Amino acid sequence: MKLNIIAQDGKDTAKKAELSDKVFKIEPNEHAVWLDVKVIRANKRQGTHQTKGRSYVSGGGKKPFRQKGTGRARQGSTRAPHHVGGGRVFGPSPRTYDMKINKKVKALAKRSVLSDKALQNKIIILEDFDWDKPSTKQMLELLSTLNLNDQKILLCTSGVSENIVKSVRNLYKVEVRESNTFSSYDVLRADTVLFQVGALAKVNEVLG
Image (cartoon, rainbow, N blue to C red; front, top):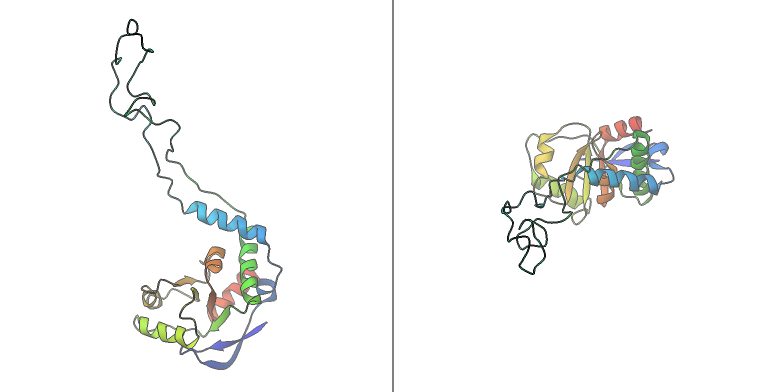
């Protein structure tokens, strides 16, 4: 599959870029995508939730009243869960939600979501570019020329570009990732994926 390469001003060029059929033209594996997204979302959880059990609340120590003679049920501590101000039963405690997934399954998930975007014609190839200084105005002009103003965008760059990252910092619908750091979840969340030529070459090489 070949796509036209778009210049940084949003206009077509005479050049074309090759999309590997092994990456952008496979039958999407929904289960692999589900597994990968589940792992990604689980690993983002902090796991710092906690409630106070009976060993953490204040009070207790002395029996609230004597064992016999009151006509009431015996009580050993005011920290028991059924007392006002007592500890909570089976409350959440800090834990890790980290999960792992095989590299081949993760790669299959990436190929699946990229193939789905390619099938929907939601992939655009841009020439390699970087700016001398951050410019949100230039980024907005590029998106406007491509008619992508109201869409969620994933921009995959060929290398680290601090100026491009700063240019989209105030655009909450635009995310920038390097060619080796984007995930299947990033692709799924985006309406359209923009690849720089260098980033596309790396994706073809690594995933293909």
